[in-house]
Length: 62
Image (tube, rainbow, N blue to C red; front, side, top):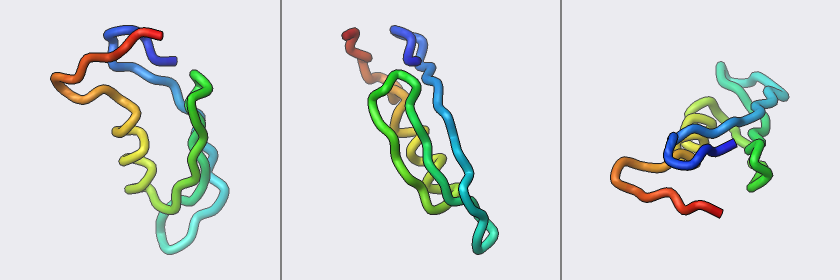
């Protein structure tokens, strides 16, 4: 769960398959915002990075 101002989030990562020396699976945001499939470990890292507030970005409270 994203905590206001902390830059933290909780994810559930499910590795469904390993192929071509990388992972394929799904990532679920625990705050219920979204669920996405990924085809590589790099794509997983990019998804996680996109969920966290970037430097200088103000996080909106719901």
